[in-house]
Image (cartoon, rainbow, N blue to C red; front, side):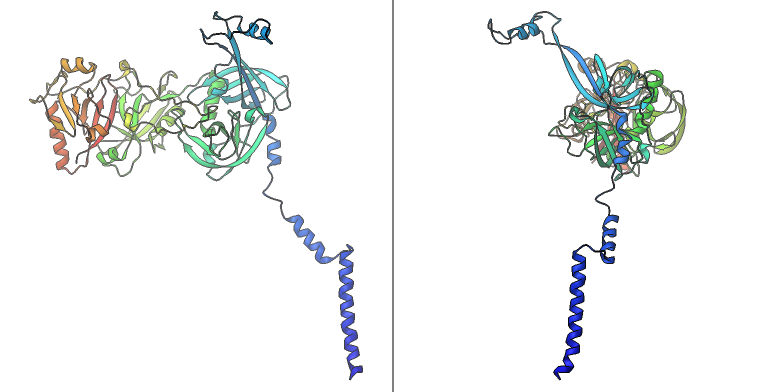
Length: 542
């Protein structure tokens, strides 16, 4: 029996020996089919996300550092420090303060920003706030060479400037892409000179589009979480094809560094501005000649609109393209040149981007009915504002008030149009005069929280109301009323109620009662300030 077990034991020992031999061969590094296959699989696995090194390498040479210097006069009357005779560095103090008491005493302030070459001939784009007020502008290229720059043109409203350098050799340049094709979540690359460190690359995604940070009338920023810091101002934001789809302009940062909220001027705006600066040295924007304000929920309900959209025309500029023309106060502009106007700012941007002299179709709503008119655009004076929200209670949102002092710009709130540029308000009819026609009633009592009275000479003198203003004057406002909540104050004038001209104080109450019988929840009022600025206000009837 024992003899019969030996062959089995011998076979078992042989198997074990083969296994030990295999392990020994593997340990000595001898080739193994399994090991080779495993190594090939590891080699085929990418180490982290796909590299953008090739893309960055081809773009870095086109991004430059902008260095500026400005001579600043010291405050007059500031006392110079008293330095004891023979004190250390006395000569330095004497040199610095030797002009004390004279207007000539000044010192030089320097700053750094970014820019990028858009033309091999030497045209460079940057932010206006990077070079604003500079006496000397120098462009520093990635390889260290420096060239003096000349300012070709600047546009404060979009914070863009165009520079020109004279180079003996063609410069590496990049081109604009179409920012309208970019989507939220797409990868983008920012290149610039944060804190003056030189060309730096950061990667992120598009976090949002169409951001309004209240930096200017044409806000339509791309928001990104790609790292943007002080010194990145004026640098490019690239898509993954190496095209410039934005100019890095602003950040929100309590600390002064990047927290992942940066804003870029989209190329759809920047390319047009830069082309005009290059061709004319200035911008040439279209001008419609209207004052507008947002369409609120109350206003939409008052006019029977099924959605909140469009821009409400609150005034027509005297001498403008549509004076006595196809657009009237109270119209709501829904599309411009075939493009939808989702909100007031869309209209400002669409008009500005249109060439002067162009005839465009405008779809609007008037008296609750759709209407299409054709207008011919004028040219906007850059010293004036394109169109202005005129209701302080429904003005532009308070965005962009970060604590970053480098690239978050001060508010540039549109200023009201001068009184002499405003079209006279609607004339009174049926023999009524602007001197307080009251339809047989001098005082209408409390109407939606307003105490109304005749607009006579005494009222004009008391409240300083312009001669061009007609209607009934608000003599007082009940505290806590709907009128007070909408910003109506003593001295305002009611010009229209529900798009009907006001003839006297009594007619206002009658019109409100009529609207109430019709089941309306709000009354739409056209209100004029004493100097003639118009705004539309929707007041709840109940």
